[in-house]
Amino acid sequence: MKNVTAALIATLFATAAFAQTPAVVKAEAKQTAAVVKADTKEVKADVKADAKLTKAEVKADAKVAVATADAKADVAVAKADATATKAHAEHKAVKAKAKAKAETAEVSATAPATK
Image (cartoon, rainbow, N blue to C red; front, side, top):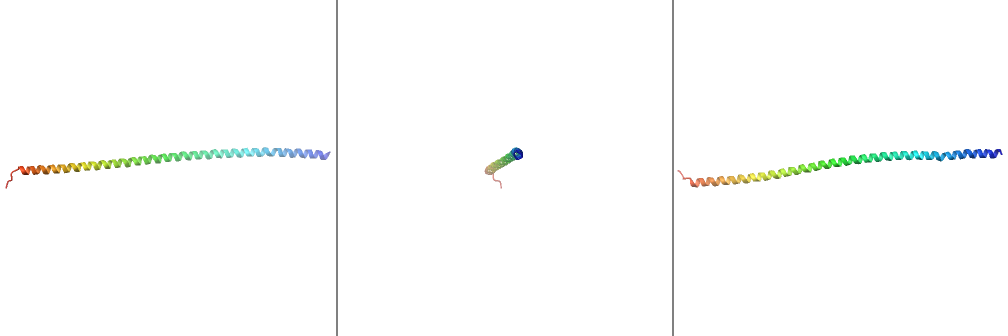
């Protein structure tokens, strides 16, 4: 009977030991899962922040490019206006010279030649 009682006691302790093991493993698994979940949230937050920063930088670069293009277009328009104004001024000068030459010739033709 002592053997049976000893076997029952040993079985009881063994069962208690095995019964606790899965609970510890489950607790460790839950803790590990919580750590992994927290790390995942942190990584997602970092990725979102990087994406926002990159998007802001791209927008800023685009605005600078648009401003540069507008400035270049303004310079081109100014150059074209300057060229047109210069051509108009040259045309007026040629016309004025021709008119002055014609008037001089007319005055010379109508004035008596004095010698």
